[in-house]
Image (tube, rainbow, N blue to C red):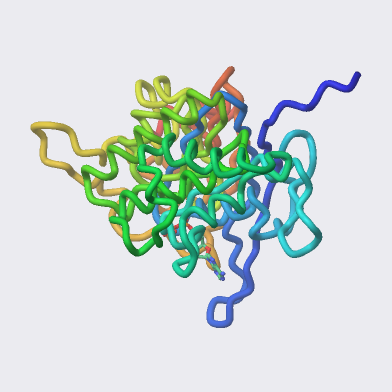
Length: 325
Ligand SMILES: Nc1ncnc2c1ncn2[C@@H]1O[C@H](COP(=O)(O)OP(=O)(O)OP(=O)(O)O)[C@@H](O)[C@H]1O
C-alpha cells in the first residue's frame, strides 16, 4: 500500500521575475528555499516590496515561478490556468488581505461555501457542512442567506476563512490576513486562524510585515529581504539571538511597552527596487557591518535548525568580519 506523502509545502530555489513597462525586469523573488510542514506555523516577515505576496501567489499557483520548484504533498504545484487543478492542490488554500479576493459580492455566503465543499459530500450533508463551517468561524447559520457586504470587515474575513476551509485543506497560506482590520478584529481573526490550524493539525504560512504578531504565533520565522530569505529559525531563538543584521534591525524596530518605538538608522528609507537590486548581498547598502566579502552573494549557512545568509556567519570570513564590528 502506498503511504501518501506528507502535506508539506516546499519551495526550492524559487525565482519569480515580472516584466514591467517602466521598470524592465523585476526579480521579485530571487532564489527562495523554504518548507512548511503539517502542524507547523511558519511566519514570513519583511518590509513592503520584499516579495512576500509574490511567494504566496506562487505557492497556490496564482503565479508561475521563472525558476525553481514549488511542491505540495510531494507534487509540483501547477500554475492555475495551465491545466485543471489536481486533487492535491485543493489541500492548499489561501486567505487574502482583502476578503473580496475570495468572496464574490453578488452571491450568498451559503452558495459560495457550498462550492468549496468536496464533491464526495452529498445530499443534505452538504448543507450541514456549510453550517459546520459557519460554526467553526463563530458565525450564525443565518449568515448563509446573506451577502458579503452585509458584514463588518472582521466578520467578512472570518467568512473568507470558512470559504478557505470548505475544501478541507491541509495547508493555509495567509497573506497579511489582518492588516486591513481594526485592532480588536485583528486579535479575533488571528486567534481564530491559529486555533483552527492547531485544532485541524494543518500547516500555515503566515505572511506579515508585523514581526511582533509573527513572534506571538509562529513556530518558525523566515525573514525576507529584497527577494531572498536572509534568516530562518525557530521563532524563540530568532527573537533571542537574531544573527542577520537585518533581523536585528527589524526586532529593534518593534515597539516595546514603555519605550518609544525607534526606527534604527539602517532601516530608514525604502527597500531598494528589485529592478535595480544591489549586487552581492542585497542588504549591503543598508548594513552597518558591510565589509569586502559582501560584494559577493553570501552563502546560506546552516547553523543546525536555523539558517543565515550573511558573510558574518560564514566560518571563513567571520574572523575578518569580527574586526569590522
Ligand atoms: N504584477 C507585477 N508586475 C510587476 N512588478 C510587480 C508585480 N507584482 C509585484 N511586483 C513587484 O515585485 C516586488 C515584490 O512585490 P510583493 O507584492 O511580492 O512584495 P510584498 O513584500 O508582498 O509587499 P507588500 O507587503 O507591499 O505587498 C515589488 O517591487 C513589486 O513592485
